[in-house]
Image 1 (spheres, rainbow, N blue to C red):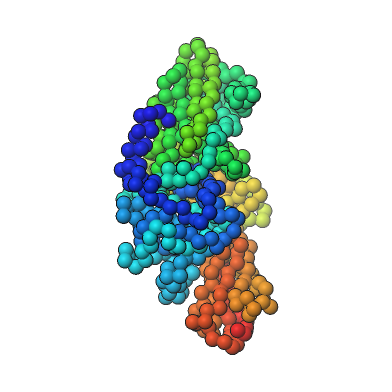
Image 2 (image 1 turned 90 degrees about the vertical axis):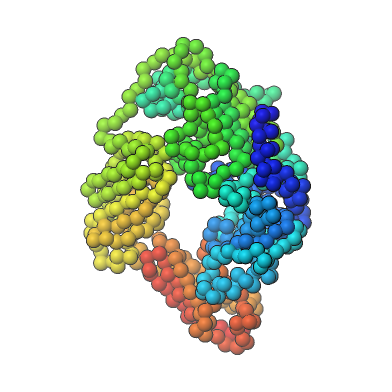
Length: 561
């Protein structure tokens, strides 16, 4: 980062109250800080909006407020952030503590009261400033693995309470974390613009693997000859001292013949804009190979505000000479990886796009497509760039709507599109039991939809292979450790479903609502014996579980406490 940029970033942090917060922010734990994830890491359909603190691979550690403040929001969900607390601070920043095992007793009591009032495990409460105030260092909850967490840890965020933007919390804890390791380049991809550029005689993307010498210098064995407009995409990781985790690269800079053409610095971003990641990465590479290649050119539909560019980061090769492309990858501690690529300008024929049998789809305006048994409506603002849409159909003797191939490569949508598929035959199923499914890698992913006069309508977030399936099978309810319910003072069941997934559950004990918590990852629901609501003796439990198609399963049993 240049001196000018460092000063600018420092000014932004001070404006947000970070300068004072850096002196005041406490450790959320009673042990040394270690990170398993950093701010801005690339994730499916979003950027990681905080830091992941390690919790020694265990749950139940006390979590402390990092500054004085009050709980402004608390939520419970089987997915996403799970049990999460939002604390508002005097400078209008908001700290977020997610995937908690449980809340502090006072907060937990208020949440539980609301859950029983709403007869719902999932709740999201906005709280007034005076209800739950905590001082710096006070325990607000206990670390866990709730929601969509992949293992015990604390997901921690800092947000600008005025704009809602996520801010990089690392400046608050940089002095407590050791990192002397620079980012590492995995691969570089050259991307000719369709119909406008060519590399080594081909319009296809070209992947270059780096060679690292003993001194750490990076070079490429392959020579590159190009003509017209090209761009680059970088696959890279970052690392920290004493950790095996892989982190995201904070800052990227690209220069052509000494002139900067692209710069990204992940200091902050709007949560509402996080899905623009699908325009920033090579989406096809992610879907098909599960590798993130970050484009150092800016698609028309990429509106990330932490990116600046000249000529949108594209390089125009129009002279018979050598173009030097310099790359700089920097982490949050200033460790830097530098490498360069020489591109030889050589005039060569630029292949025209193959548009036979296609329909042009444009970023601006609505796009519609129809064929036998399929209708597709993509609203304006859903595409990241224009392309030539290809449609195909595949027979499916076991299906009820055939297989519809919406384009020959994966395409992400920024806003949902409406897909309608016509049933080839109706097998007597309830209309609610039909649903659109996405087909990928031999797997079916339930999308759902609404039945309408022989058609199924649903919203989709990407183009791909789709068909219609029927789910007429009820969920399965299986007691877990039934013989130990009384000894453990906990009732537990495993819920499974064949296709559409668990949508709702409701339990009663002796006819009164009973609160069962769902661990979405494991498909487990459980209810701890509550002396305030359950007396000693024999009781009757009734559990009703409903999937997304309305199929219901009921389990009724007696137990004794």
